[in-house]
Length: 309
Image 1 (cartoon, rainbow, N blue to C red):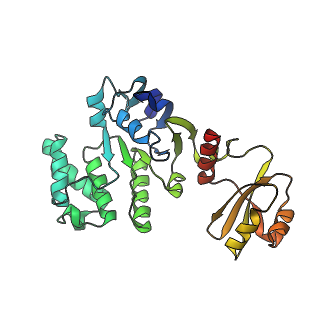
Image 2 (tube, one colour; image 1 turned 90 degrees about the vertical axis):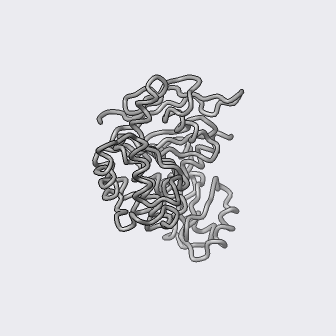
Image 3 (cartoon, rainbow, N blue to C red; image 1 turned 120 degrees about the vertical axis):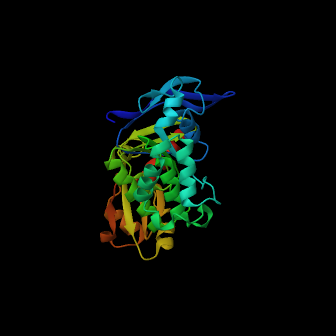
């Protein structure tokens, strides 16, 4: 598949007087990992339901894998896989039995056994194929759920919080698997609250209270003017006494914002404040104050605050 795998044009969903999704327009390139971000209740799930043909929009259009989500809903559903946030497969069935069920549900017929073995190999779950779904660890449950989403070989796969509740090693392994599948042409539409995962995406969209606040590659979002207000600069202060320096930072007259990142303190201050002067005011050596670029977390916090201002 080439071009855009997913296209939204003014997509809108209204419940009563509330615009849950408000004229959202964006596109997702085929063979990419697209991150769809926003706080709980922002409209992410409703958008995905419309893209999956489960909810009809009130206005606007959308297409998935070249099919209109309203007029070609059956074709859309055949062209997508979906992996829910929680473990939504059958806990009492084995890995083999779960995949057999989904193969039959998608009507794979004679191709079912071959395709089942293919997805077992793709996700590497072969050693656990006789285990019941409910007996698998969180990481292996996610792999089984991904195998079920891939069983009918869809070009587009929606992943809702795919790494929620699993350990860092399992998270890394799952993302490595997604990248391998993307290189083979799959398109993944991913929701996540993990900013390190968002930074791995080819492009992103951030939705807040139903409105699309930003979209594009991570670097472009971090470079937006709303994230980097005129007349301000951003520094990292390295310190061995984070809480004490954090307290002093809030006494800096030209402080705009401050937050703790690990052993550093990230600050936004008036551009007239030099690193040397900032270091003096908070009591650290000047060598421990350095300019930084905003992170994605910084970007989304700034965009949200600008929206609420």
